[in-house]
Image (tube, rainbow, N blue to C red):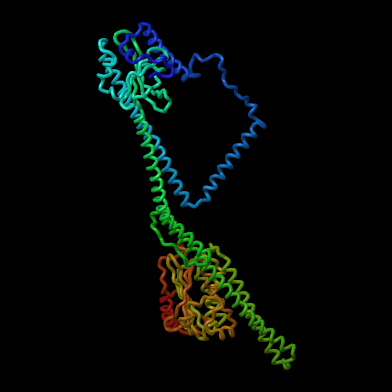
Length: 601
């Protein structure tokens, strides 16, 4: 067989037995030199413009002046960049509209697919390279063996037959330029005819196709050898690569099937894992919808605090608890406000109705004698005063509720309480008013006028709800942290069911008697509001032996509290009213009984 560019082939027997003309040697040398020349040209072509001998005609690319890129020249490029950014935004927007589960699964599949593609590309390339290297080593070992065992008295056919790899290799002899003849083919490939007419540099393995163009390829390596001791020929040893291609194709097919199976498996596992991990988020979404629908009792199952989803669930429940508490507080506040407005309206309507009734009677002529007119005027004056007191109490309560700032003045309670006792004794001499406490200073931080109003209201509550002859005691107990002032009376007291409501607005334990005495039902509410303004607390409890004790706790100014303060000391006691005529011993005995009542609080 000959390559398409070769001359008509001679008889194979003649090729083996006939002497080769001496003028073939220059042809072999010429073929070798042409091969070396082509290799040099190929290297020069790869060097390209980096070579120092580049053609002088080649010119450098024309550069655009800076002025050409300014002005209107930038508009097309800027518009193209903006359009590209918009397309990317739209593309990412479509991806962002997918669910979190779909995006996570898609990202996992993309990462796994990229890794599998990389493996599927690298493994066939490495395998093909390894197989080609093995064939190159085979060719090199054969050529080395031929060189070492070359004997001018043994023919080329004898050398081929003596080679142990003769059944795997093929040999082509190049007699001259463009002339090649196959001398031996591998076993099973009798029609193999590699196009080896254009051989590269000698001793370098290379790949050549089949001259028939059927897609077969071969690895070949050439050497110049003397045949039959007469001349030099170009011998090309070649080995078919059909097994290499088949092996690589099988590997690619197997990798493709394995990759598809792995993608399906990874997608299924990722879907299950992502669904399980995102199930708490779906539960939170459903719970949030139910909460938005008004069911504030809904909560999510608390997860592990060590996971992000678990911490989110705990935070979600905490947020819902806080919102529920705020809504409940707001609802409670609104209920209290509605109740307050209703109670205030009711309380104001009573004196207004009374005044209107008396005026209607007067206009109708029903008050036809002076005593009736005087009685009507007296009742109208009483109801007017009660309405004025109620309005004043409402205004005071509103002001104290609105004033959230903590007063910063230092107030000594002992002079303030002494003045309150003096005022009570002047207003109502029918009761006994006492101050029992300490000679040391009891200083708190607050508003002096509000504090005076606080204790005046407590003493006024005693005047309103106790009968004449009641003993009321202000007992002061001071410590470095708190000052406690207890208002103790031995009156009828309050039943246990009414104690929790005692500081509610418009609450009256005995409504009829309170209205007759002009009470508004806001006195103790004002007390509680002033105490809250001073960051304190107020407690109501029964007095041992009968009566009511209201104790106010206020934060003390530590620098002004004496180290020897004792809550049961009775220094500086004051007695007013009908008790002033008793002896000192009687007063001390009575003070001891009242002091024990204050200590109980």
